[in-house]
Image (cartoon, rainbow, N blue to C red; front, side, top):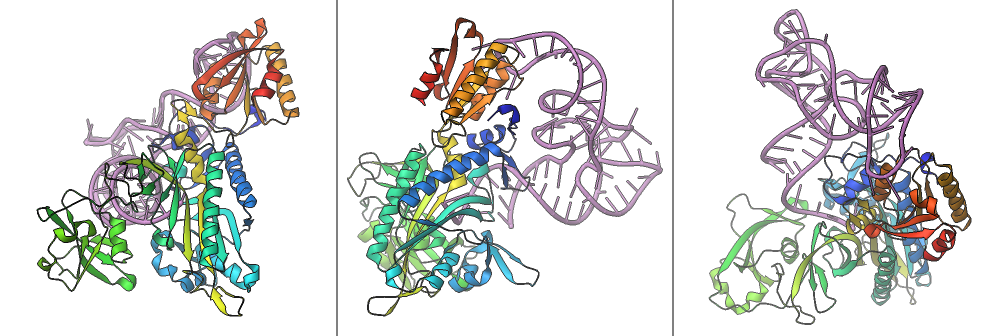
Length: 509
RNA sequence: CGGAGUGUAGCGCAGUCUGGUAGCGCACCUGGUUUGGGACCAGGGGGUCGAAGGUUCGAGUCCUUUCACUCCGACCA
């Protein structure tokens, strides 16, 4: 492509609301454009191209693993969500609206219901299982506070996959296959990531793992072990219990646990003073939908004691109907790993993928049954697998940038090579640029030729901002028969003679 | 939803206190000069000042209402 023909509106100025490198550079580089509404973005040609490349990697690996792509209707009849019980539970992130006939619809934030519906209509026998269907489509979540550009938009591109099995064993096999497949995807995209144990959240289910792209700007705190592979989201992390005795100072944190139909109870969480209450663990311990601050001095209906305290706490001191022990405190840095005993530490990650063992949580209420070998109806056992595709663009930049701009990884780069003609008035430079451009195109390389009338400085700034992995600068040294080969990462340059440059490029790229 | 703030040209902002012809930088258009680190000169186009109502001879500016967005805290790929 020729730069002069492309819509790449790069800017010198930084948008004032952008704080993350990915947000700043994606806007400045003209990859995306804010739509003005919060959390909504247009993808401009370059951004769309990268999105397609990332999407292609995801699709390629999934298809190789035997998954099948479908495309579900974006607008979803609310009836499906009533059936699964999530219409109530999902909350305000779910965008609801009516059509002209006053029928209720939602914009899908995730598509378990739709996919189960698709399958229950078409799959009746164990002979048709297992099945792994996915789509790479727009999702909409009416986020309370969208921010960070593509990182947390309201509309976003997500790959969501769903697998259906005749047995739990087979689902676990597929779950492991998807973990391996996801590793291949993230590796191909050039990302440094960690697979961690996670809480299942609103999607539900038993086991779940998150794929965390490691970056300081990540919104999630993850606990990792330096000595082994153990990693977990702080929400789900476990450590070897600390030792406490009866002298341990305790604190009680009171929260209101919220349940379906607006029910709530006041719960006291008892833990050592030097530890933190982990809200998600606490929420799970009392099987609640959510925890809120207790506004009144309600009587405690329940007490949950950190299980590590064990005999160190005297249960008779609490005057309540119900008392349980559970792991409710946050793992702290320096705690010991349950796998190998090594020291645990915190790091930050961007959640880019999440895989769940769903079981029959959706197939049962939605009646997705199959007939087994004995002709008996059974609910299908399900897994669900997500990748935030548009978020990956942001994650790639969070992990690969410098103070000048983006540095795209090989598989995500908008172009493999950028040819920069530094003085467009110099006929010799222009001629070489054109020749090289044609030669590389003929060689099947995706090349960007910067043939604009701008000066050298402006072109280099744009090159650095756009972050194409390599460039050839045709400039002053052409009088000595030399051009420069530039590697964006580190901005290293190598002098190459004009005679050799074509072969050089073929070899290096 | 709680707290803080901002709405003026495509983007970034000044002007609001103290009412009196709507401005600056970037970007854009025309002509010329320039070409190794976001050039320069000259000329030019572009605005219901977020919206509605009010006060006033006169409102971007004062008053009332409203909407939107941003930032800090609780949800999520």
